[in-house]
Length: 348
Image (cartoon, rainbow, N blue to C red; front, side):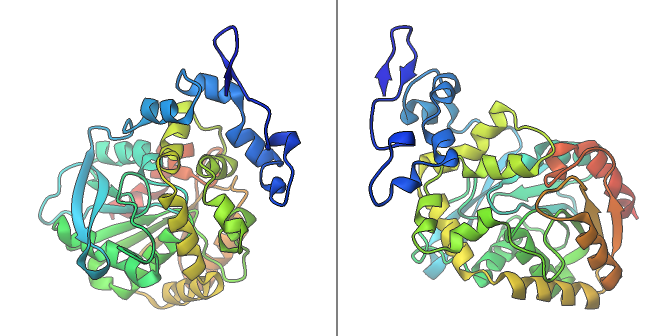
């Protein structure tokens, strides 16, 4: 970067943007990369400086707000891993907490407003960052952790054991981690009192968004793993509203700090069977006796409300439409309305 006379930064000439060339020039010469990495207006406004290091320093750890907690679990071969989580309300004997599981490219930050809303209504809420996400440990895939279905499900069990919680109401939203959480719930009905599903893939036959398919593609996956702004773009594209600069910083932060969160997604997606998982969730919902509710934000460009309704009709699951303009991220788009859609179910 070169420093301009007025104190801002401009890009030096190089192999990027419209000038990108060579065998892999396409990786830089596309709207996504040009907007993500070479947006000098963003660089100058994000952290008051002209390099990624200053940007990282300016945003580091600011998402660790007062509800933050941490606990240790075991990874592969007993390696210690940290699970960061948010807790609002106190854990009490005889009171079932709400256990929130986020989706891919997300973490617990997007749930804060809904956690506050539910906590103010008397609910105790716990929302971990999955291993490889947010402020939890970022283990190198294949060493301290394999991002397989079995190990991801093991995180749910170990985490709840570590904080001393026997039974939960499961609440999910998003892709992959949330889908594994639903399978975990139906395999452990003694630990799950109720299930609440916000915009999560459910109906067999629906398509995985191309943004996520790219993590499965040879060569391409190595590029998208390094895209520090992919998370915020994916979430904002799905949301009914633009992300605030503060929220964008939170979603960008892990991917700026390290390549490991991106590599975790590549490993996770390489092991993930989309069609089989949808079928197993469908069959599980059809047969389980756990009370369950699907609440849907209808302005979702990734997951059609009609598919969610068809799933609920086929499996005998209660369905509610969330009122207002709500997209893929109900917990972020309109926390109050999202809670209103489920509060009677939670209380009964």
